[in-house]
Each structure stands twice: as C-alpha cells, then as structure tokens.
Length: 191
Image (cartoon, rainbow, N blue to C red; front, side, top):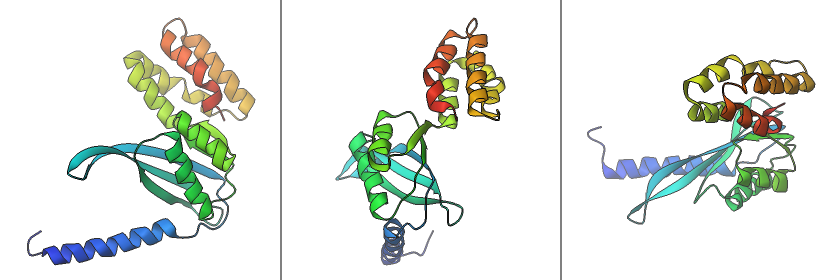
C-alpha cells in the first residue's frame, strides 16, 4: 500500500478499535444453550518484548438466531482464573441459559464452566481426533478415520457408548495407546 499516511493508518485503527470495543461490550440477548470455547496462543509485542498470550474465544448458538461469537479476549495464559474471568464477563453482558459447553480437555476450562455457567461440559470431538492423530501415527489415523466416527452416528447415548467401547476393545490388540486414550476419554467425548 503506497500513498497511505501514518495519520490515515492511525485514524483507521482508531475506527476499528471503536467497532471492536462496541462488539465486545454489546448486550447478549436471548438464551445460549450451546457454547464452544477455545483458545490459541500467539506471540505479540508488548513493552519492547515478544510475549506469548492466549486469544480466547466463545462461539455459541443463540435462541434468537444463528451461531455467533458472544465474545473474545486476550489473556496472559489459559489458566483457570483467565477462563473464569472471561466467562464472568460474558454472563455480566447477558450470557444465559448455557446447557452445554464444548472445549478441549483443559482442566481450567472445565472448572470455569462448572463454576460460572453450571453447564454440562463435553470434550470437543475435533480436538480429540487431533490429539489421537498427533499421538498414534498412521495406524491411529486409519482407526480414527474408520472406526471412531461410528460411535458418533448412533441414535442414542447408550448405543454411542456401546459402540465407543466396542471400538476400543477391537483395536486393543493393535493400538494399545489409542484404546487406552479412548477408555480414558469416553465419558468426556460421548453425547
């Protein structure tokens, strides 16, 4: 971009900052029965140094309309107090009626969800699959792609649980680590 002055850039940034602040302070109306919570760590410049921060985001289903982002924040880490503060800010703005919160299996998130929202927590299936893929190489990838999703297509929670355990039992002779991971995570991932 040539021909853009520093003052123009500054003015545009102030305008964007105002819109972001308005977005993050807007009242949250209606019920929010389902909330997905996640974060990613980024390196940013602060005080002349490069530091790691957690960019935290919540995406929810609102009874007044489609899925939307009720809020996001930048925290110093992904520790439980950061998650608690983030969820408290959302509830002060009107986040209500959360029945189910879905996230990675992070103890800080689980504690904050229980403390602030009083909602049921479930482990994100996508993150679980990524964990398996990162852990068990090619054999794990084939199992994840072929067998694990069969548990998620069942009609009832009982059938899903039975299928989950059947898959873990079937793969035990070949992929012990994955079978153990499934046994450990079954109650978190199941519907």
